[in-house]
Amino acid sequence: MEFQHTPVLLQETLKGLRIREDGTYVDCTVGGGGHSKEIVKALTNGRLIAIDQDVEALDAAKVNLAPWAEHVRFVHANFKDLDHILDDLAIDRVDGILMDIGVSSYQLDQGDRGFSYHQEAELDMRMDRSAEIPTAKDILRSYSKEDLSRIIYDYGEDRWADRIAEFIVQARKTRPIESTGDLVDIIKRAVPKGARMDKHPARQVFQALRIEVNHELDVLEETLQKAVDRLEVGGRLCVIDFHSLEDRIVKKAFKKMATGCICPPDFPVCVCGHRPEIQWINRKPIEASPEEAASNPRARSAKLRIVEKLGDNNG
Image (cartoon, rainbow, N blue to C red):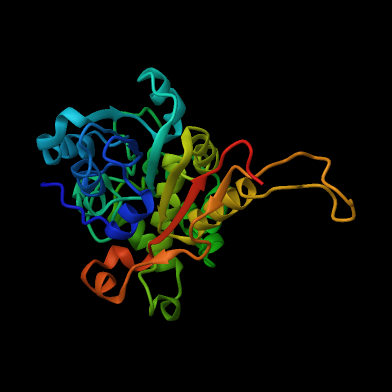
């Protein structure tokens, strides 16, 4: 399948990165290269580090960015290893970093990945299919009812988590749960008909399993700190997220890094010496225009937050 993925909030992201033609930039989730293509087009003697843990996405990006290949270094890795990636490339600081978090339209549409509840496929859900980690099928086979309920509630925010977990455990006693269709059938039996009117009953469960398989939230806050650490003073970090779990982590991490004095409020003068690492460019997230949301459904839930690295002597 051809890798097609429309970049969300493209112009807003490019403006947020404030690209310099001789700068060094990192796209932590290059995907098919939609954002990266516009970044690298703005460079003359600058460079772009294009990272993705999905080999197929990286291969597609190499094709799409081929005219600018001299300015691009492609890296197959998880963005949680950002510090090691830059160390290996002998890069100390960069001028801008983009993190477009979550699953791409291509991954959802590709039948054999198991991300979509609309297509019949084996329950895999690994972003990096070369990674030796448990798949969604493995999780459904081995997790206890309590653990299944926990991840469905915590990562899927599904009010029917306990009942769905119970139905999964009962179903696997009869036969293995191996396909997306198997799981969707179980979820439909577990969720009362009246609760299925507004949205597909499997959406939140599939999200929860994908997050658990890829440990998406475990490393996000740590990676945000790594990204800020590697920015030049005045460098920008742009983060696009797509659901409330990610957004809460991003907001919390940025709030912590943007905080100055942490002395008790009754202290007359600051004695802690703590200084903010970043300043907000937009406290309120940038969202898609009605026109973009209408033309690209994935953009409807996208939120863009931008911060800028401060110097050591900031106030």
